[in-house]
Amino acid sequence: MNDKEKIAGWMLDLKRILQVFNVHSIVSVLLLLTLHPQTELAINTHVAVSETRVTVAETHAIVSSLEYNTTSTHIMVSDIHCTVVKGQEVNDSKNLLVSDTRTVSTTG
Image (tube, rainbow, N blue to C red):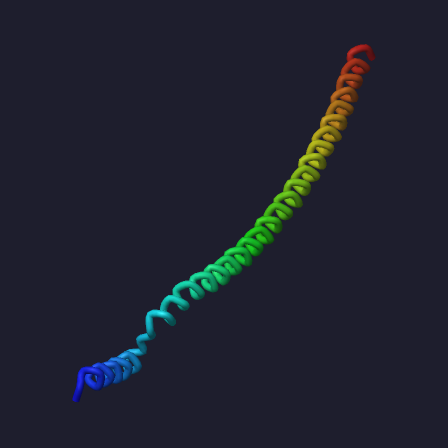
């Protein structure tokens, strides 16, 4: 057996071992290293953008709810204010009537 035959035998053994352990040649590994990260980056970017869109939609819903609640609160405060003002007007009217009655009683 000459050196070329020995080297060919070793190469064959090496290929079998590489297949058993699922090891690729340097060229295919380099292709995987250059293509895989770009694909992974594109997928990760797509996921990040999708998650950002969902977060923005949820934030928009929260802000809309807060705007609605603020408007409702403003309406409630306005209603309470009107009720208080009307109550004061009624009390002022009753006070005037009571004072008018006292004036009439003392003069009469």
